[in-house]
Image (tube, rainbow, N blue to C red):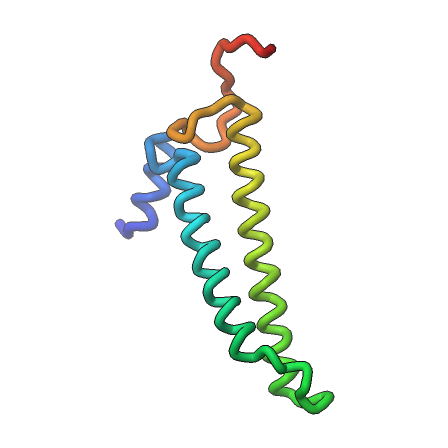
Length: 108
């Protein structure tokens, strides 16, 4: 059995591996990696606009930079949605992620 299969078994079982805290921890790690990589990439190729028009290398670098920032923004949105969902259902960070089961709490 591979380690990925073991992780999925833990998620299906509803253990700590399926919690909001673990999900957001790994999403934040990916978010930081994207942010640092995009910042370095954007700084290194800051003057890409000065490239000759239509040159293949310039188009590839511009497209790569754009998709890297788009992916970073998607990860940001995923983190915000996960935290918002946790707050809406009244779950704690250690509760299983994306469960719709609310505890018997009075809403004010």
